[in-house]
Image (cartoon, rainbow, N blue to C red; front, top):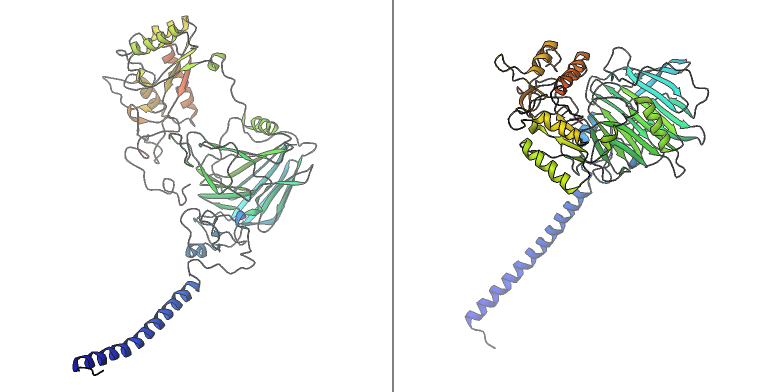
Length: 525
């Protein structure tokens, strides 16, 4: 076939395009392969932020479940880990500490070991290592006491200066005789320092602090305890979803706080630093109690282990042994004091609600329940019975006849419980005096600001308030006297104490929180 000029030109053009396209396609494919090779290469290179620290004598291989977190205050990074002289080895989920303590942290025992009739003392010296939160205590004194055959006490204190210790009405310096026999034995390791408590009958280690270092700084104290069993109960106050603790990396903060119960891992109204460990199916158990009133975290982990992190005071531990959980609790109560036996009527049926608004409404509820024949032993009165929500008063308008109403309850075999909030209104003047505030001010029994003189003013239900300082003996006398004076007016039978965490509707005071290491500690649980 003869091609026309146009067909010939198109054929040549197609050939040229084909010749040009093939090299371009080959070059493009090669570039793509090279690019994929670079990505693979960069992915295979260790990331500077996730590479493991060299394994050495200071950074031994540690089971993930037994790692003690060296960065509890912020998201972990290798830079922070290196700065703190700890071991970086990212493995598993983020709940597993990626940065954990090396063997260079903690303390070592000095040669000064002083045994005595009830126990022994040991001087400890801090090992050279980076400081986590500053102001580390170099010289720590371990004082150990074999208080009873089933109770061991030890505390760690600053050897060179006094620190705050909880003044407890029942827990006093031990003055008993040395027990004739012990159900436990105690061992102390030299470097790094650790303490171990073992049950004599079966040689089971109950309490072993060698899982982590002792840390003792001005505002950060820590001790970890390796346990023989994950059957751990106690600690609070929190909303626990089950009686036995979930040991899968949970951190429970402990510091009294006015907050609604919830499913979060948050601190609530009370503080309980005691836990019980059921060792096995035989019932053998032991308990651990830390007597410290500072804010703290208690961490449980699957080792199983428990770590206390505290921001002040001393480490003051008691270990209780028992053949059953009940015996452990008995040993614990023998130390701290037994609960008050409630009056018989307190075990009856109570009716409590907020906002009756008036005595007439409360009377209506009382009569309705009586008419229905419901068991009904105790009526509660919330803050609306008060005059302007002030303690030790009642509203003479909306609750007119309140004293007579209480007498009528008594005649019917019923009791009255009134709510009282420890925050005291400072709204008092010559023309309108408020006796509880005036008498407390005369005795100087309010919580003061850092100057030690000026009462801290907060805000609670009655508005601006001051707070009773119950560590002042005069305050206890004032408190009892105010109840007596009010009981002379209204013959209540019980007291419902509320808002005593202590609660405050503003942070610190109406003037805020002053900038200090106490208000803003280097570590916040």
